[in-house]
Structure formats: C-alpha cells, structure tokens
Length: 410
Image 1 (spheres, rainbow, N blue to C red):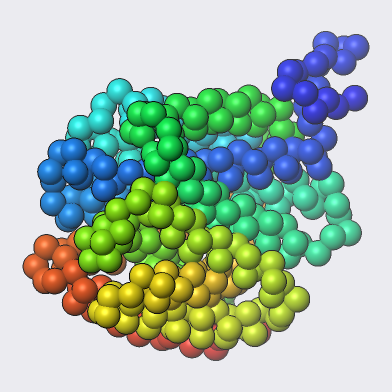
Image 2: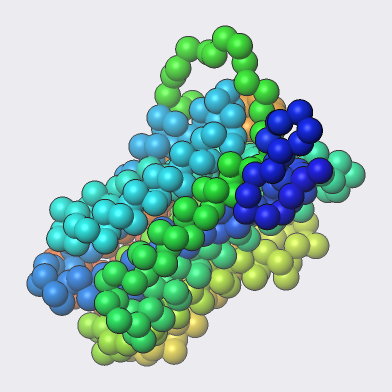
C-alpha cells in the first residue's frame, strides 16, 4: 500500500513503500514548481542589493547571467544523465543543489557570493528541467496510459512557467512586508526545497538502470538526421522566447525603479509574476488549438507585446510597459509549449531526457546572451534606447524563428 504522508512506510517484506505513479507525478510537479520559483525569487531583490552595495546596473545582468551559465553548463554536462542514472536520483540531487544555493544566498551576500549562488542555482535548474519534464511524462503514461501525452506536456510546461511566476511574487511580498528582505525569502525556500527533496525520495523510478553504464559523454542531440531541422527550428523559437523572459527576470525591476520611478519591491515582483503567469495561463486557455494555430497566435502576441514594452519605455508609460510584458508573456507560453511538445515527440523514450536537455540548453542561451547584450547597452546608452534596440532585435528574431517553426511542423 502506498502512503501520501511525508514518511516512508514498510511493507511486510521490509521494502520501502513509495508513492503510486499518479501521486508521484504530482510530487515531481510540486518539486519542479518549487525549484523554478526559487530560481526567480531574487528578481525583486536585485534593486535592494544594488542600492546597498552601489554596483552598476550592468552587474545585475552579470549576476543574472551567472545563473543562465550554470543552467547551460549543467544541461550540457549532465542534463541527459537521468536517461541512464535514473530520474529520481538525478532529480533529488538537483533539488539538494538548489538548497545549497539558498544557503549561499543566506551566508554570503556580497557580489561574489551572489554570483556563486546564482551559478549553483542554475546548475540545479539545468539538471532538473529536462529530468523532471521526462519524469512527468513517464509517470503520467504509467498512471494514465489512455490519456493523450500532450496533457503531460501541458502540465509540465505550466508548472515550469508557473514556478517562474510565483518566485518574484513571493520574493516581492516578503521583501516589502517582511523583516530582513534579503534573508526571509531564502529561508522560506530552503525549507520548501528540503521538503521537496524528501518527497522526491518517495517517487517511483521510471528508468531501468543498466547494469553496464554507457561511457560518459557531454550533451548531444540524439535524433534521426531527418528530424534535426525540425528540432533546431523549435530550439531557435525557444531561444527567442526566453530572451523576453530574461528581460523581465533581470532588468525589469531596475527599469521600473529608474525610468518609470516605481520603487515598490512588491510591484517589481508583481510585474514579473504577471508576465510569467500569462505564459502559463495562455497554454491552458488555448490548449484545444492545433499546434500550428497556437504558434501563430503566440507569434502575434509576442510581437504585439514587444512593441508595447518598447513604446512603454519610450513614453514612459507604466501601464503600457506592463501590458506589453503580459501580452508578450502569453505569446511566449504558447511558443514554449509547442517547442517542448515538438521536441519530446521527436525523441525515442531512451533519449527523451537528452533531447529535452538540448532544447533547454538552447533556450537558456536565449535567457543569458540577449540580457548581457542589453546590460552592455544600458551601460553605454540611455536605458530607453537600449530597451528599444533590444525589443527590435527580439521582434525580428521571434518572427524569423517562428516562420521556420511553422514550416517544420507537419
């Protein structure tokens, strides 16, 4: 008999009893959401660090990029190892890595500590993202074999974006109304992450570990040659989409405080929350649309949103800037879901984790590189002009990539 309590029980043979596959699915979903929320909880806190230490705005993009680099390094080196080490073990290590990052945030709050904490957090997220996505798909297929596999992809994508949305909101609330704004958010998430690790230990494994492990190699795209053009088309779309998220998880709070003169920590968290939440909600609202129709709508929304963000920055207009971000976020959600579903459908079960890791590797490059570029732009140009240039470049990239994705779809 399985148990839903936080403790491991034993059957008559003395064997540990774990969650059933259905309950395990939701446990992994909760752990995934918690980890992704932790990865964005510093977003409304960057302005506090900046005011306290006096570092330039460009340093915020470097701190943020340290996270994205950690994600990419771990995706390249370890994002695929759950295919042969097992999903549960790798997911557990990833969540414990996030707990280590929380400890670093608490006890080393100077810039070098922030860089290290963000890098470590990125390492954990990179390992967990592909692992949890594959694990959720497999747990759902076992617990509900007659269900459309796209339902699992939808839940996984919504959990991913939902977690990214709740992190800034929680961080903003605790920073605005709680004591010790640079401590309390990390203390709360340290507890949640350790509880998540305990839950993961009770989730069933879905990968049969091989007696002889294959020789280790870094990440590659294990796809038939005919499928690679379709994969890379979706990956370019994910790159462009994540560039929009990168803006709102790094510089948006600083832009709100400087250009728009809105210094509320809660507002900084709410704006980023709204952008990511729009990405999750749009997937749910348009789930019955065909994949090409979802993509077309996503491209329209992202394009319109980028225009709103750029014009809102130029006027400047808070409501137009926020509305543009929310509309763009809704478009990102649709494009991101399509990219994940397409990549998963191209892979054999034995290489699904590897293919998803490759997709997220390229997507997180979109999270880091454009943000570093706009950070350089802010250092050399007026913030509004840098934002306009960034929006224009991503606008072009989004539409070029989107057209490639549409052509590659069956």
